[in-house]
Image 1 (tube, one colour):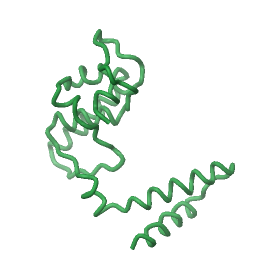
Image 2 (cartoon, rainbow, N blue to C red; image 1 turned 90 degrees about the horizontal axis):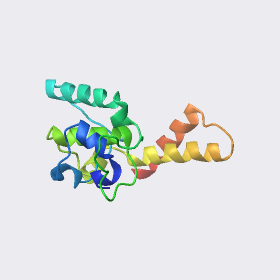
Image 3 (cartoon, helix red, strand yellow; image 1 turned 45 degrees about the vertical axis):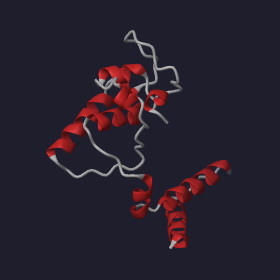
Image 4 (cartoon, rainbow, N blue to C red; image 1 turned 180 degrees about the vertical axis):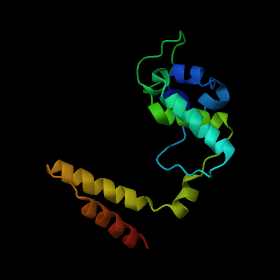
Length: 143
């Protein structure tokens, strides 16, 4: 999804990120965040925290600063939108999905989700042991 499709205009404006070079790019996913603790990374995280504390940025309330959302805007991705805008503004570069998958066993997350959603659909809860067992079984079947 393009940034402008999933980020309300107020977030662009308040984070000083309302530029073609940002809103015409794909949004950065926040499912997995890897950070080396450096002064720059700490500034980034503090900036992201401040953005997440600002209701004009973090909530899905309509933009109110006097600029319309971009034409293809569908919904606001809250903390992910703030993260993605700041990530680009700071000049960071994301891992490619293929590169990420060399190190992260995505099947574990899928298996945990399926175990939890199956239990929920049956009106049950999934214990932590059941959740972890499903993840471990998925990881073993991938190797």
